[in-house]
Length: 562
Image (cartoon, rainbow, N blue to C red; front, side, top):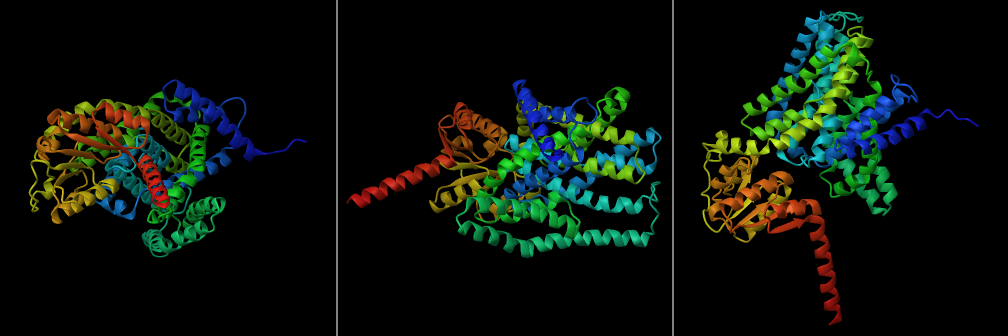
């Protein structure tokens, strides 16, 4: 007998077509997400054939956003978030303001109302969580300084959009919408309540969640049931996201991110990330499918110039603003370009704002179509920006060599700096988790070393503690010279960015061919890449664990034999 199963049809249709078009895109050397978007267009209401349930697809996509942000939180500690606050908060606010003004300018030129222009501009100002995180994950940038800034920037945008979604309905009467005008006092009360809820949410997560979440997982882990542990991880991610929305009024994504970030302090964080990965990837695919379903391709024929102008604001205007903002904080050009490329697209919050604008009578359906068209095209263009960024790396290296100077950041210039060793020392590139452990080991063995790190706060702390450290990007040859690489005995490359690591190794060996280079990798392909650039030894975390386990087992068997 026939069954009406829109949920099953939506999931199966979306995933099957996403697989087909994703594989085709990969075969054509294009990012798979291009195929996912095409799959969404095919099952959307604007193309013939099977039509999936758009509302169900969007809800399923929201699960993908929750799991993705939960996974990011698992790799992003509170210390990392606070470390980038000085650039993420002012940078994100300034970029949102500039992009909103650009969008309002285009709306004004079209004769739209102030309310329509505000909704349109705000929709073009906020980046997609899924697109940004996917781009950073594919290029192993999540744990780099650039990745941390991008995530911090994204969190600030998220909080601003939460406040915006609360304030727009209250302001709709003033802005020319269908809502009633409200007094200034009522507006201030609404704003205060919203900010209070956000602060309360963060406080509850830091005070109670920090104890409750690890405690729950530890109790479940003690049962030895993998199924229960996996279920607990999903329940925490989805439950805290839903609770954050219904109780505190913050977004699903923000709630899931804080749940993951708190769990990151637990020893079970790696296992939690592993258990949530398959579902996270599957639902993230459905996000792109749901975006494709919203797109009406006829807008490209009806309004080609307006679509181009919208895409120009998103890809050029917003990115250029982000680039100049990050550069004004004295960050390297490579970091500035990475942040700019990461933000050169729009996504889920843009769709929510557009829908809200229509429901309040502020935005026309044509404005919504322009936002959706700009989103689709910017998401398609975004991977190409990162490809172009890779090709710019040789030029960036030359540029940063000029900027490197003595290798000390301007704000650290007046600080008392330890004397740098000049001969027989080790140069340690990167002071993340791996670099920190390596520095501790070198210090315990009384081995002289210099740290090169592009995190100013970390360099300041090292210098205050008496550890020789230089602020800057080690990919610039001037930085290596500042670390006296010509007289060094060892180079330890502890950064996760494999392409940058290869360039650092190559430059170092040109200066000092006798240098013994040791680098980290996560796969055979990365090992081959680093060896091709001259690394003498490669350390793969999983391989070292396996070797240590086997060595201990053999040693134990030998002692028992005696």
